[in-house]
Length: 434
Image 1 (cartoon, rainbow, N blue to C red):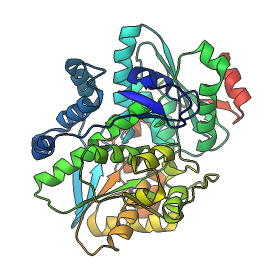
Image 2 (cartoon, one colour):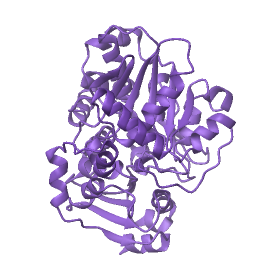
Image 3 (cartoon, rainbow, N blue to C red):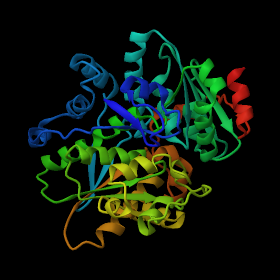
Image 4 (spheres, rainbow, N blue to C red):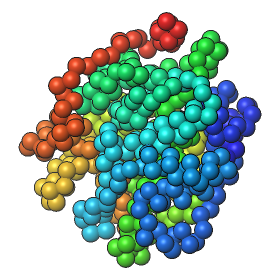
């Protein structure tokens, strides 16, 4: 795989270089020159394949020039060893549960695959790497779990103080070992800016082998495409012949970019719905054609509190670049906290299914889109995190106590260890150099 920078001011690189660099020197994002189309036989037989089988075939099509089949199979089997089941909560409305991995969030797919891929390359190069990652909630926990005790890799996680749930915070501040948490006095966008600035700083880049585990890293997007194929396979097993619509709760827009990669590889998708909370920069772009970043607002769906999504350029390029083409693949919707709580409560009372706030935002986005159609579709809502990770919001909204998985409840008794820092780059740089 040969990758270029979206700013076109830095050289093309190999997969290995893109994985460890994270960002090109011109502050663009890495994108593959070629996204292959999967053969018709793959889709004919997809309903007979496990998610691990699907992941191997998809990654082989993308990465076979860089990694042997045997090594790639080992990477996939190490990373994707949990399922992504689909639950029909209403007629023609399905929830794709992406929270069955170690950190109980969809980012386990990307973080574990990336960790496995980096370990493979590090074994060959015998070098050490320092990973910097900003999180608005779930990325930090998934990266912490994915890279925990991985030889040759040090992880520093930046998160905004007071803007992640208690369980999310404990997931990234209680591991120790090679994982350090920095509690930044600012927003997620501030954390993300610090990480980007570090990659472009010559003092830091000369001293450390810096890498990113955010969705700005292309190796995060590749495995996130797997579960779109998995959802299609599940629908096919049920005999579905209706067009498929995916509604994606969106913050940094890596997840929907991964879906567009799947579509470019041949996955038949009628439409992607990009669903956001009050941070509706992308829905406004899709509606008007104008992209205007904003200061992020705090909401109950905190993992989506992003006012300047890093993957906007990738999403746009994958969907055709110009606005007129983009909107043939993606439509947008956004929801207030009030509407989100109402959807959570109504779905629970009607179906007994518990949705986290992010899933509820996607549910509303799907309904907003399908209500405009004159045909039946199979609507798939991506559920990106277990509801118990947002316990206070869920229990307050539903008016009842809910069951908490033991692996999450055990975290609450552990001691948080985090280093407080300002949002100023000079302080972050000083910390790293020290």
